[in-house]
Structure formats: C-alpha cells, structure tokens
Image (cartoon, rainbow, N blue to C red; front, top):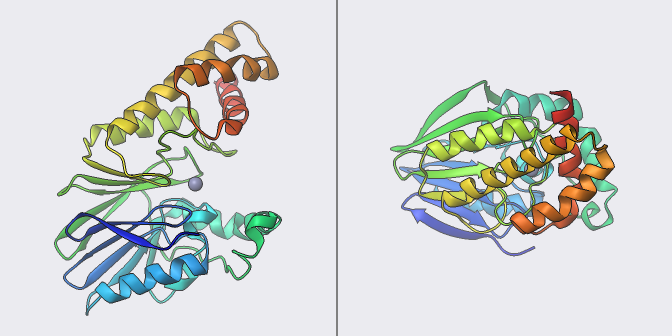
Length: 275
Ligand SMILES: [Zn+2]
C-alpha cells in the first residue's frame, strides 16, 4: 500500500490519494470533513491524523459514499465523530456487513489487511441530501441511486465545482457492477453528475479527472445498453450475449479490468430482460 498523499484541489479541498480507494479531506476554519475512510485501520489512521492536524476547535465529520469495504472498513478510527451517509449505507452495513466482511476475509491477499476491522455503520443518515459547511466551504452530500452499489452518494462542492463521485465513476476501467447494482440507474446518475458541470472530478479509484470522464462512462453504458437490447431482440441467451458483446465493448472503448465484462454484461442482460 502506498503512503497517504494529500493533493490540494483548491485551498481547503484535498484529495487523499495512495490508498486502495481515493478519499477526500476538506478543511477550513478548524472544521474537517473526511470523505471515505479506506479499506483498513492502517489506511484510515494516517488520514485521521491528517484530519486531526487541521482540526482546531471545529467539528470533524466522516462521510461514506457507499457501503463497499474498501471505502468503509476504516470507519472504526472515526467512531468518536459523526459518521454521515445515506440511510441505505447504514442499513446495508447493519444487515450484510458481517457476512460481507467474512467473505472478504476468505481472500488470502486481503485477510491480514482487514483482520482487525470492526463493522462501523454511519451514525447520522440522510434520505436525499444533506448540506454541511466546513468553515465557509459548502458541501452537498447527495444521494444518487442504487447503481454501483445498493446506495451511492456523492459530495459536491459548488464553490470550487469539485465533485467526489465515490464509485459512480470508473475512468479507463470497466465499472464494477455487483449484484443489486443497476445499469439504468447508473446512466441516470451519470446524467445528473454531468449536469453539475464539475471542474474537478475525484473518482473512487484512479487519477483525478475532468467532467469528460463522466461523459465517457455514460457513453460506454449507453453502448452496453443498446447492444444488450439488440441481443434480447434477437432472442440470444445470456451466454451468447456475453460472448458477443465482450469484444464489441472493448472495440468501442477499450478499458482495463476486462475480466469484469462478463459479469457487467450478464447483469445488464438480467436487468433489461426483466424490463
Ligand atoms: Zn465500490
């Protein structure tokens, strides 16, 4: 794991890079907001220390974009502070947190890293949106959809037009679409994010982007949807659809993590065949 790197976007607004996922650190006037805690205590602790350094007599908040382990398994380092998220994140961690953690621990490469993780659900939830002020910095936490996960929210900072997308943006990679996610919702979520006209876009993973990456991913999903729609119209079965669309998608917009394609196409097939 690389060391924590704090990269300033504009004064007070930072991306916290170097972990398994990208995180955020917003601070002004002695108050601090951390966006996503990271995958492990060892990842969250240096971020907490960086937050503590910037905190004077103001508040310290943590916000979780979605309930996936690589974004929330560091939450226990922040338990003495409000942990904010959409109510679906809390519900998901309470209902499935232990079972998912046990499954992640089956992964040999991951087991040691997450051995001391204690599932720590958010303590302050919202349904649609919540605006908080970090000093004078306005931060809008907005629930978007069940798209990449069962509950995806973003942080939008209108003054600097900075957007922390969580995993609603996968630039240059095939997006991960776990069971329960939705292609249709994801396309709609991307349309809402594109409409913000963001200048700085911090995805859940990978380098900092511009809004163009959102448009690219939307185009990719639209292509996927069209291809699967045509497959259904031709009465192809699930397997044939996957086999035929994998090369078409990679030709249209070649992306890394190609091994995810069969799953994503299969999920799109299941979703659209029900529609
Ligand atoms: Zn995720």
